[in-house]
Image (cartoon, rainbow, N blue to C red; front, side):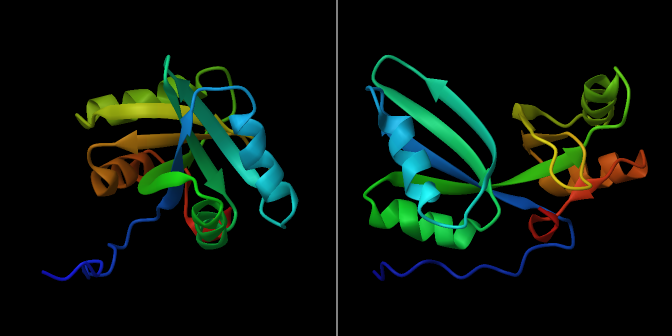
Length: 154
């Protein structure tokens, strides 16, 4: 049996962003190792979420160059995986998050987890969302005239 990666069909026509999930021992200085690794490059961390437990932590990252970041993290000995996520711009006003979540709930789309992305350039605040149906989530958000970003937009 071959150990080569499986080839899959090209992605759909929905925009998506690549999230890197880094698995760390839950001990002092591990998160600093990641930030120092990127400090020596042009890679920018655009969003970060840390989910910790007693023994380990999962650090979820959205970066502006996921290919290079993946290679750097892997070469540095970090265990990591990738997932596709939806990045949606929050509408202005105090009900932006409710608007996004309400749209997904109305479409019966499960939100596995969600975290914020800081504004950059002309782009305002955004939410990073991992769902059980990426293409349907994107269609629903766009139907409500919400901005869904692609990796190239970041």
